[in-house]
Image (cartoon, rainbow, N blue to C red; front, top):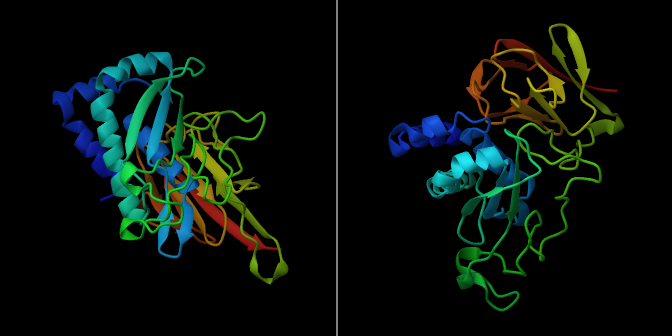
Length: 282
């Protein structure tokens, strides 16, 4: 069973169903959970062959209406989200520098249903030893504490903030195209990527492509069974697809999944719509 599905099941039993009423707002907890997973993936720092460090301190910014609706339950929701991050990190073999914390904050510039996630890597006090000293359990040395959206100072610089003019990431916004360049193909030729939906071809010209029902998605799919930000395709070697916390999930080559490797001709089902993934050199 996937980490997000377990998270949903745990949430269903909290506060005698109170959460079910609270989360009739635009922002759904499973969508926030999916965003936290992506925040870990996008800010993972490889320290050595056996250790990849990800952020452990998260702030979820919500619109005023959503924050007022969720704030009475922020403690329990934060604990559940932190548990989900811990489960996901275990699945992906990620490491934390300190305890996991997830807090909710109000952002006046966000409309109802939109959110932002900020993160940073904070070392626990027990791990702050002399620079370069070995850490318990093989932890990498703790450098200066990084700010939200930035990796630890000892790590190689990584892009974290959106480029000038870009809108913030999160539910309802496309992710900035700075996360991962498409891998160069073998043999010197250039690999082309595209998808086909109902006979229409959509070129993939960036490293990531978001599919969804929202007009903010890179490719909009007018299907009531498709979430506003349903899934994301990442081109590379290999290319992959990631569910973004959608309501109905994704089916890839006949298998219901949250993440899968794509090959030329892979069939992706979202809602009642079939998407064909294609790639070719030259």
